[in-house]
Amino acid sequence: MLTETINIHEAKTHLSKLVDQAAKGEPFIIAKAGKPLVKVVCLNTPVSGKVRRLGFMAGQISVPDDFDRMGSDEIEHLFGSSSSE
Image 1 (cartoon, helix red, strand yellow):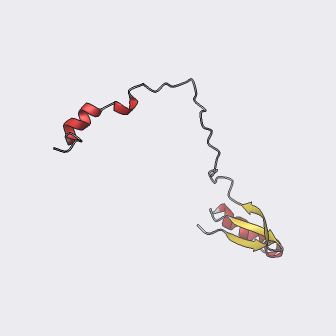
Image 2 (spheres, helix red, strand yellow):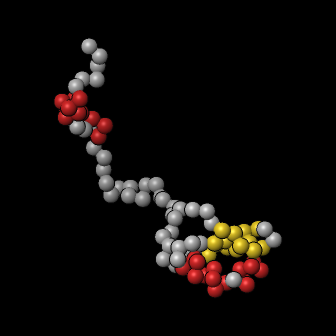
Image 3 (tube, helix red, strand yellow):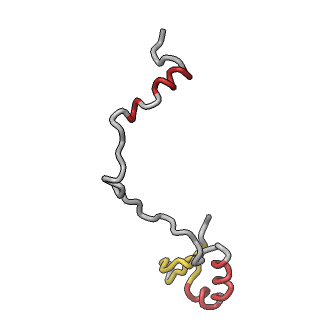
């Protein structure tokens, strides 16, 4: 989705229309002298780009030592041996 950029003067002139547009899920950016300043989005818009923390479950789960071999018997039964004959 391409976000529209509006200069601050135009945003002041058409604020009501622009707010209605954002409320319908069409965000826009307000710029001053061509420099983007703020993004206007609907309050119900899901937060994107949320920082994911690596290791946030450390100590709460464990990975078995044979994790990379789990199911190998079933896989070999279904697809045959991986060695060429």
